Length: 440
Image 1 (cartoon, rainbow, N blue to C red):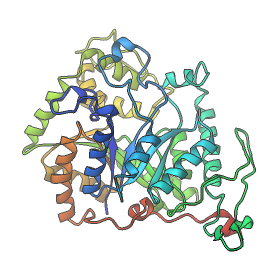
Image 2 (cartoon, one colour; image 1 turned 120 degrees about the vertical axis):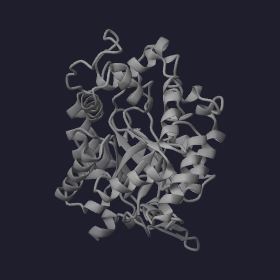
Image 3 (spheres, rainbow, N blue to C red; image 1 turned 180 degrees about the vertical axis):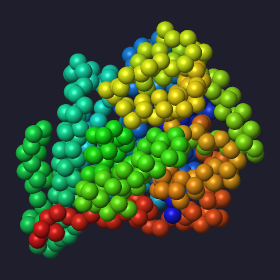
């Protein structure tokens, strides 16, 4: 069965979504707005909700340019997903926490708490920080170098997973007659001492119904792929064409096998923004209308950020100049450069194509055509499913749920009911064993 994630993002994934007709005022900070998205996702039997996060304004510090976007507003994700856990029953709840500036005990405790509050539906999107402004919010002038961040991330993940194993599944005996709450032989300190962290433990949260939260990763660089193959159970990726997506998919599965893991225990889910119309032309016109709302200052600034090069002095109707390899967003940078070279886009055409949705694939067509392409990618060994993005909320999401998902269901490609209660059950992922129980 195809897997589908619902990538929530403010008023919509398009940079100009907040300007589009029908989008609610103050959608970014509205709980009711997010409740409607979550419940629509559950109606569509999505595997999970996902919300990205940074601890800063991601796209630079120029507040004059940013005034044309809603990028300066962002709800804290654990708080948001905890609220959504109370109004949903099956859909998974995944959000981002950085390993660069946070501490393992905080992250382990927060996601374990969300996992319990949601009865086993939590997932952690493990990232290293890339927004330059994030360093300044944690008493640093700049990020540590790339290799350091990934080495820290690998140890961070080991510590968090160790903390999640603090309690064996049957540690709580709740013997009220004798006044004994738990078996002390089944509650364990981690006593981790490594290059980056020293963490004693134990965690103050029992193991959840799914064993531990699902680990998600989005790295496309060499270091990112290595970390994902070692730790991730779901991988988000930016892919623009079938051949490149198939190459990435094959590489990740091979790396997982080399790391001693079963390749089918790591799910690859490219981002996809479907634009649905009665005809493909109608869908393309819908996209063109919202693209026209991108102010050139925003388009150039966003594209410059993705590519790591200031493009403001280059002519909009000229070709993309030679771009040196970047230190940040390496995988996304390559995808965008390859798209520009392959299609001979001008700078303005390129920012129209990618900056509205941060380089992810946009697919215009009828519901059947969109389902055809999704089926082709899954059957063609390029994806296990997709992280679905909508131009605007809630209208574009409702169209996908009401038009595309029924086509997938009729073809036997997608569930009609949830398989279980936990995120792992619905994703088809195994419950990991507790290290202490297995050692015994």
